[in-house]
Amino acid sequence: MPTLRILTLDIGTSSVRATVYSEHLRPVGPAAQVRYQWHVATDGAVDLPAVRLERVVLKAIDGALATHRGAIDVVATSAFWHSLMGVDGEGRAVTAVLPWTDTRASAEATGLRERLDEAAIHARTGCRLHPTYWPARLRWFKSHDPGAFARVRRWTSFPAYLQGRWLGRPDESVSQASGTGMLAAGTWDAELCRACGVEPRDLGEVIDVDARHGELLGQWAHRWPALKQARWIPALGDGALNNVGAGCVDGTRAAVMIGTSGALRLAWRTGTTPAVPPSLWRYWIDRERVIVGGALSNGGNLVAWLRDTLDIAIDRKLDAKLARVPPDAHGLTVVPFLAGERSPDYRPDAYAVFAGLRLATTRYDIVRAALEAVAYRFLAIFKDLEAMTRVTQIVATGTALQSSAVWVQILADVLGRPITLPAEGELTSRGAAIVAMEQLGAKRAARPLRIAKTFTPDGRAHEIYRAAAARQQELIERLENRERMSTPKGQLRTPK
Image 1 (cartoon, one colour):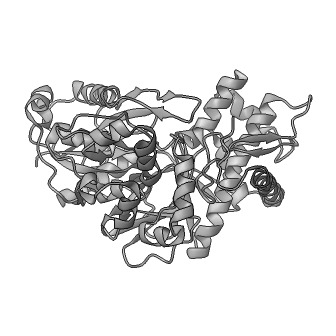
Image 2 (cartoon, rainbow, N blue to C red; image 1 turned 180 degrees about the vertical axis):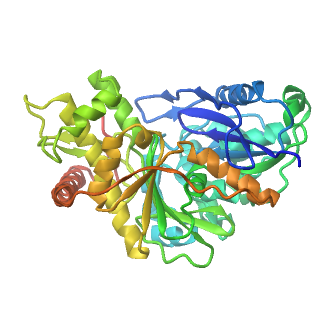
Image 3 (cartoon, rainbow, N blue to C red; image 1 turned 135 degrees about the vertical axis):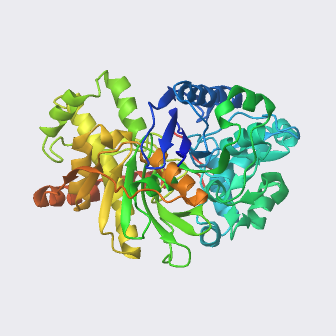
């Protein structure tokens, strides 16, 4: 029998990884990974020209195929949620690519909250009004860059832009569209379109994962002969595929992920999902599976900032030193909103605070306090998920947790639940391969996720952390009240 080969593309916010898998969900040869950086400005701008990001993807594919012989049967793509860019009538980029970390639309998000019924919008779209999502960003472009807004003929995610260029099919998958904040009942929300000054046709067609997404156009087929006959699966959201790869799709097993950002997610079959509280979002894997959870804007990016700011190496030696710091023994209270905040409160203008610094505070105290602070935000999400359903298992995913046993143990102690750490690190790529197998109707050999270690919570540490989490929440509320009292009505304070 011929051997099935799957090329997975994982377009993340810090690197692009391309891997060839067999039908047994095992990598065939080494993965190709290409790292990149966004342009970051003091006004909250985070962006990158589409041609630059496309080159990164091209390099990753070239690398994966350089050591592979034979044809690829299917290409499955994972891409970060919430990206936005505008293209002209020929599909050429008019704007740069904006990832979820761009916060320039904070004022527009606040303005939308004042004029629209956010609870009703959340009920329809599963999303709040926040700078992460398209409504606020589209209004930002209309107000701050009207020339570009007028030239744009279609607003799109980055993976849909790529597939338009390479395959001639620029459609949005229901998974990617669900992360825009503008999808309701499978179509673009009319009220939000009016509020943003666009028509549904300006956002393109929404398709499902089973759509036949075209074949490579001439120059791309010439560049990659191995992909000439491959079937391309419409690009899905990276968080959705992370849950699929971790086996967390039955409504009881949750995936906790820390990469650049963080997330805690459950997935259900359509029609069996309980009501979603406003603190959580609701996206889609495909039209048969819904995914619910909360996302943190601060995860590995917070650790990277601490590494650069404190000039400290992030390695096993650091992990060993952090392990020797007792729970909440540093005297610090940290609000870890360095990149803003999403779940559970979706404050558009949130910022970070390190309170309690003293001469005796060490850089290891600061790092440990930051890891604990992120875990407290997961606790808030976890409580709301548990109000929907009983979580029977938590699987740790993401590069940050794979490289820090201390952080996984902190999470287990804070949540008060065992957390399993898989032996396999690239669960998002694995999830993409699984979805490809599903779409091909291929029967894969059963190979359960291998577990490297289970972290058991410490009861005493859990009680200490519960009190520390309450202290963090108190500080957040005090800061919020102070800002509310010092900011004139109708104005949005932007932290310096």
